[in-house]
Structures are given as structure tokens and as C-alpha cells.
Amino acid sequence: MRDELAEALLAKVMGWTDEEKARERPILQDFARYKYDEYQQYAPGRRFIESLALWLRQFETLAERKVAYDFFRKRLIFISTAEIRHLVELAFPVVIQPGLIAKAATALSVDPQRSKYVVSSPVYTQVLRQTLFLGLSDGARTDVFRRSHPQISNEQLWHAYDISDEKAASMHKKLKKALEQQLGREPTEDECKFHTLCLLDDFTASGTSYIRLENGQWDGKIPKILQKLCEDNGALSKIFAKDDIEVVVCIYVAAHQAIDHIQSDLKAFNFPKGRVRLKVVHALPQEARLRSPDDDKIIALAMDDRYFDKVVDDEHADVGGTSMRFGYADCRLPLILPHNAPNNSLYLLWGEYEQTFTGLFPRVSRHKRGG
Image 1 (tube, helix red, strand yellow):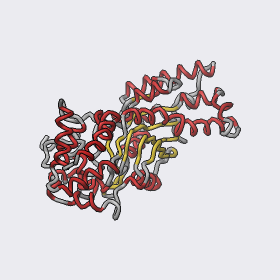
Image 2: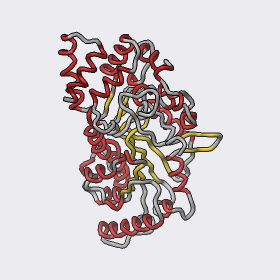
Image 3: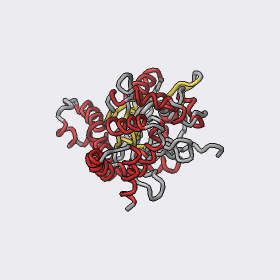
Image 4: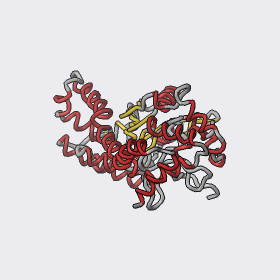
């Protein structure tokens, strides 16, 4: 009954004829069942079609509602939980393992294209065990990553990059024990160290939370981790080799703006102990970003003060250097993730419930004002 009321409200808001209702209704129902009802930040009891009707009702004219509806139908990118899981499952074999195979092939003095031979060798087994996997956020889904790749030990994967001395010592002890079994002898001190570090995360649109230069100082997750690797007697540095460390930043989904930013800043950042590479499982097409003249109508709505709450242009938005109308750091994405709408997307899509404009997929912010 609630779905029927939501569909009736939507038809009224859009001024649809019976023919238009008959055309749009099954499409929207399929959208809702296939993806959009799984959005996790809807208010209790609310689902997609109701949210769509209430979102469109906020626009004051029918012409504006048609622009918003057309934008939703043609431009929205919603990455479902199943799709994210698939990208997590692809991360190791597609973007991480080839580098480990190349490293083992070099040690074996063979062509890395002989992957079956390399992977079956004791050298590859050792290279894999000397690789540590760390999550950069909850979105890393390290639990799914571990279950998808049983060849990776639970003792070489951790859900966070801030490791305690106790955890580091435990990892080192388990690494030594595993190598003793693999090698059939006491491993050397250098062998009892991790040589590759894989940093896992789900999504980036701007890349600034990973690495950025502020007032002549490097900030972000990547510089913090690389600095920990260089600290004398630090928890992380104790369990890694002294040099020739390979750091792989593996992102499941990334926008071109973020890829360009991270790669550019990594070139400028000095990591004396080794190399840092960015690997992306799925790069969003450049056309995903809103652009003129194709998206001029929705851009005009985004610029309209009636459909924007200036409270979101706070100190956190200042880091990105632009207004949040088009998302953090002017990313201009029409993208939604199932657990939360990224603030890099158009504000029209993610305005929070307590704000003057509520988005189609209201976001729950990590930064609470006044708290």
C-alpha cells in the first residue's frame, strides 16, 4: 500500500498522463528492486520510490522537476553492494598479484608471463607471505577480501593502517613461523620482514584525503603511512625491510580526477625506502563528471540557492577549495554508493535530512556540526 501511495504521489508531482505512468512505473520498480532500495541511509521505513517523489516535490516548477527526473534517469551511477563485492574479489588477481608475480619472476630470472610456473614456485609463495594488506577505511572490506583469497593468511591482513606494537609483534612472529615451514630452515632477519605493503580502500573521487600538500607539508593517509615506515623503532617500520619496499595503493573505484591527483602528488613525494604505485580496479569514465553543455540544465539547478543549504560550505569543504554545490573539490559526480552517498557527488543528490534541501539519497556525514 505504501508503494502504491508513493507511486501516486510521484505521478501527481510529475503531472504524468496514464500513458506516462504506464511507461515509467515498471522501469522505476525495476530500479528500486535491482539497486536503489538497498541504500542504507534512508530513514526507517522509507524506500526509493517514496524518496524520489519527495525529492522531486521540492523543485518549485514542473519544468525543474522534469530536469531533475531526466538527470536521475540518464546520469545517475549507483554502485550496488554486489558490484562492490565483485570489485573486491577482482582486486587481488587483477591489480595486486601481477606485481607479486613480476617480483618473484625477477628473483627466478624468468619471464613474468610464465605466470603458472612462477605462482607454483616456492619463491612466489615467499613473496606473497612477505606482503602485508592494510585497510584504509571501513570501505576496504578486508573481511570480504580475505574470504575471497584463501591463499592470503589472516595474519598478513589487518582492517586498519594504525598498527599497535603488540599487533606488529604478533605479525612478525607469525611471519617467521610461516617462513620456517615454507623454507624448511631458520629464515634470515631480512626474510622475516614484510617487503610489500598493499593499502586497500573502496572509493576516491578527489584523492585529497589520501595525499595533499598543505602549507608546504604533506598530509593525508598515504604520507602518514609512508612516514610510519620510515620511523625509527616504529611499530610498522620494525616489521618491514629497511629498503626496497613496494607500496601498492589499491582502490576499488576511482574517478579520473583522483587518479590524476594521487599520481601527480606521489611523483613529488619522496619515499626513501622504496616505490609507491596506485592501482585502480575500476576507473570511472571521464564522462561521468558533469560537464557543459550536456549537463547545463542540472548544473543550473545545482547553482540555485533554493536547492542548496549553505551550512555545508564549512571548514571541511574549505579543504576542497570549492563550494559543495558540485561536491567536495568540485568533483561533479552523479555517483551513489550503497552504504552512503559520497559528498563528492552533486549536493542535489545527497543533501542531509536536517538540511533545507533533502537529497534523493540523503547522506549521513562523518563530521557533526557543533560536536
